[in-house]
Amino acid sequence: MSYATKGQRDSDVHVYSDGDYLHCLNCILDANFDTVSLDTYPLMLAHLAEHQAAGHQVPYAALERLQKEAAVSPSVAEVSRLEDAGLAGPFF
Image (tube, rainbow, N blue to C red):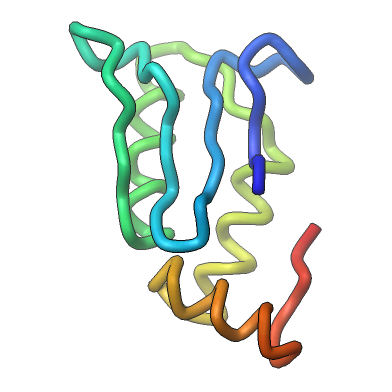
């Protein structure tokens, strides 16, 4: 599930979930442009705040969706499990 795609909607970041982790693909904050993988929404929200502090564009819709999912559970895997069971979301 994609939250933001670099180059689209004024986004400098590419953030997606594989159901267990949130990934910042080829992160421009990383000196080697490695992918940053985090297992909670609060950690990704903090990471995206670092992007914003560096002047990078992060779509408001991506932040809003991550915040809504974080309100259900901080765990990416738990929210995915709840969505699959029809007990939460979908948030898109």
